[in-house]
Length: 358
Ligand SMILES: *Cc1c(COP(=O)(O)O)cnc(C)c1O
Image 1 (cartoon, rainbow, N blue to C red):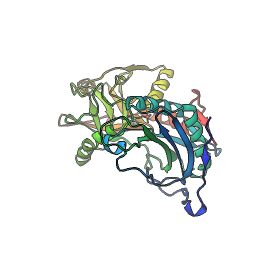
Image 2 (cartoon, protein in one colour):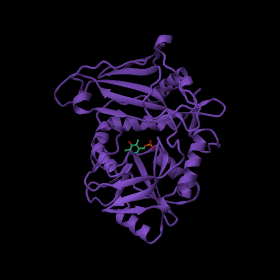
Image 3 (cartoon, rainbow, N blue to C red):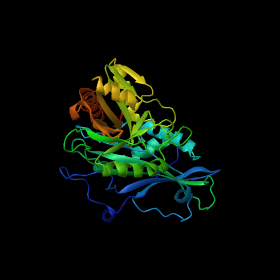
Image 4 (cartoon, rainbow, N blue to C red):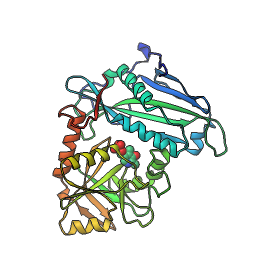
């Protein structure tokens, strides 16, 4: 394995660590150090290093700035009651990053190596991992094309980095349902496109729909399939689940949906609980008719940031539907408690998902 060069921040460069009781918010504070590594075609990855956190210096012609060759990940490190710091299924994030990278003609990472780099970075930044319940250290690995060239082409140079930042509990006021707006005007991804890759274009494409939903008073957009605009795909940047009668249904990974690690965890857990679980297409018509006949029990989204997001209201075709009386349903609650319990070391992890790093 390559040696990771460490340059420590001087005391002057160090920022104040999170203080218990002070609201952290999301993604505004970054820790004192960053991991970086360069790639050059023909030479591979080189120069892995941990340095004081600093702005990047990029050529204005860097290909990422013109043609969007970029992939990223999002995961968290959790503080356990005994003070230890643990990661949740982190290997899956780097494996997914490699799949995203292949789609974007970007080089793959050595998963064992970047996991080791992440462990070293977290150990160095361990005082940044909040102790407040529900708070965590957010981890953002990113890869960008750095070669300067103004023709559309695959870059021969890349930069990979991992930045960290403490984040507050997603639901500081308690676990609450969100209101979502089904957009029929905009789409997130079509088959053959970038939908299953965690890459910047998908998020740029989603902003206008999100703004429109916000203006109408909704928190998130529910995306429909690009072709028929009939089938549910995702909610915002989360996967979606429908609980109808005694069946838990989520759209299948057909190329337009981001294969969420929380989604996979929900599937694992609910199968272990011997629920009836289906990965299949589900139309909004089916959802509405289940709602009208009283069979629709719950809708919830899944993702790293919120873990589980229950849906309280759904706006579709000019009508607003209330789900489960606008309350958190028992299944959403049970999954949320179970996953959070495992992540924060409150309950035993029967799946082997947690890894202690510090
Ligand atoms: C990241 C992401 C998800 C959720 O993935 P997790 O691994 O569960 O965090 C779902 N949909 C989109 C579009 C995403 O970007």
